[in-house]
Each structure stands twice: as structure tokens, then as C-alpha cells.
Image (cartoon, rainbow, N blue to C red; front, side, top):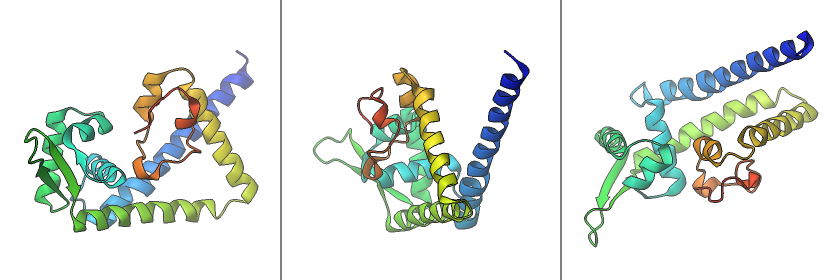
Length: 182
């Protein structure tokens, strides 16, 4: 590999690290801190968002959707339940099935966090020309497609499990690697 190629790859790694940090620090971590007074962790926000996107989720589906163990999902739901953000409902027909639902407070908080993340992303994208925004989105889509290539495991691992917000423009769903997007 020539030095130009090495430098290009190193630049790609560096700029992608910065991109990830911006998303994590300012559009996730900071939003959580501002809207929840640090009472809710990022994994708990992911759980709230999953339930919000899928509307009334079985505990086992939540665990699978978050790629965590059933006991971990149960403990997370207990903590969220103590904060009044979710409730558990046992299926009277099959007492082994426990459904997780957002409370009114949990739904409002999740929607406020989602709205704020979108607002912050929009404020950044608005500073870019339409051509730059389009190039960024196309580049990120191509990157995701290349990253999952022919690996269903990778596709499944990074799939956002968008539920009700699923889009036909999703590069994972459109990659034909992941047959069922949850």
C-alpha cells in the first residue's frame, strides 16, 4: 500500500471516529443528560426507544432486539419501571409472557429525546449545502452497505430494529443480507 492510500485510510478512520463521537456525545449523551437529569442510561434509552418503535413488546423480544440476555432485559425493565417509564403486563392467557409498555411519561420522554436528536442533527445538516448533505447521506449509505456486504451476522448486529419507523431506504433492509428487519 502506498502512503497516499495509508493516509487516506487513516483519515477515514479519524473522521469516522470524530463523526461517531459527535453523534454519541452531543446527540445522545448530552440529550439524555439534559432531558433526564442523568437518571436514565444510554442502554435504558435504547430500551425505551425499542419499546416505542415496536409498541408493547414481549420481554423476550426486547432482549433479542437489544442483543442482551433475558435477565439483563428484566433488570433493565425493573429499573425503568421504578422510574415510572414502563410497565409490565402479564398475559392472562399465558402467564409466562410479559409485555413491556411505555407509560405516558415514558412515551413523552422518548418522543422528546427523539425530537431533540432530530433537531440537533437538522441544525448541523442545515449548515451544509444540499449537495454536501446528499453526498454525506449517499456516502454513509454506501459505507453501511459495504460494511455488511454478505454478512447477515454483521447486518443483524448493527440493525436498528426500527419497527414502526422502518424505511424502505434503509441500507440494511435493502442489502438483502438481513431477510427480516425487526
